[in-house]
Image: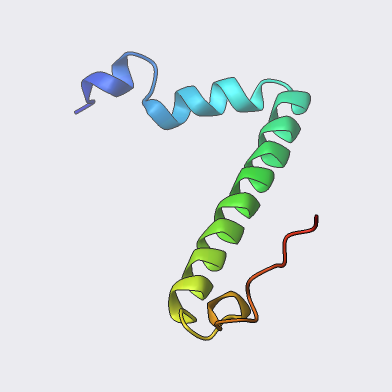
Length: 72
């Protein structure tokens, strides 16, 4: 027994496949953009996790050391 989505020509994954795989240039652009966005997301997440785990131990948290002198 076929479902309604299969009778209409496929589901979400098949539609994405048709959009992304139709041309090699679109697929390569999607992969490169996805890698860039994924790298930025992982970098941001790891940075926030590191800051959360090291509160009070960072250079900026030590009184007198983390404060920059005003350049006048």
